[in-house]
Structures are given as structure tokens and as C-alpha cells.
Image (cartoon, rainbow, N blue to C red):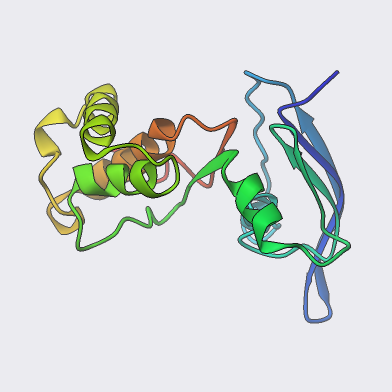
Length: 175
């Protein structure tokens, strides 16, 4: 079976503290997989490692057919190729403070997906409608509640239409 996500024997340490110890997981296309555990158990480190925001010490990550062997030096082009297969929704939103909700969504569409401004705006507005924020397109993050910011972050991830969306505590701030 070909998986949308495959992680094999992933290891990650910070100094002498090993956080990820040989983690392996597989998720088929359309499958929802939840990673649960107590605070500090490595869930966020695993997600950040899967997207190469943290560089694993070893292991193989394959998402959408793009494979990276973390035991070797990871080429920038390979990291970008893997990241193009994913979108990440962070616990703390990671919205650009100087951009509106609409601009936060269109940024990735224009820079990563190379969409025109008009096409990016159309996609972003559809995603804002999907998360119930059509009327908030021109609001800046500071003008939005925590839950609204989280929904903008979710809309931004959905707009990219990735192979996989990695959620880190996605419902922690929803209102």
C-alpha cells in the first residue's frame, strides 16, 4: 500500500536528551491520524520533524511520494519539495501580524503555489467562508479572537491543498 505519509525509525535529540526514539507511522490518503500523549512527550517535535522545521537525526520521511533520508545531509531543494506536500497549523497560529486574514492566506498561494493575485484571492475567500470568517477578510490578527486566528490558520493550510495537513493542538483556541 502506498501511504500519503510514511515515517520510518525517526530519531531526534536535543543535546543529550533523545526526544524521538525510533518513531514509525503510516497514514493512508484520506485517513486521519491522531498523536496523543502528555505535555512534553514529543508530539510537537514529531510534527515539526515531519515538516523538517526541526532536523531529525535519522529516519526516513515520505509525504506525497517525496522522500527524505534524515540520516544524510538534507538538501535545501529536498526539504522544500517535502514541505510543498504539507501544510502545518500551529498551536500559536503563526499568522503574519502585519497582514490581514486574507493576506495571510494568499501569501503562500502566491509564493509557494505561484497563483496570480486574483486566483489567490478567490481561493482565500472561499476558505474564509468555509471557516465562517468571510466578514473578517480585512481584519488583522490583533483584531481577531484566538479562535478566529486559529480558523485563519486552518483556512491558510486548506488553501494550499497539500497532501497532508499537520495540526498541532488545532482546537486549543477555537471559540
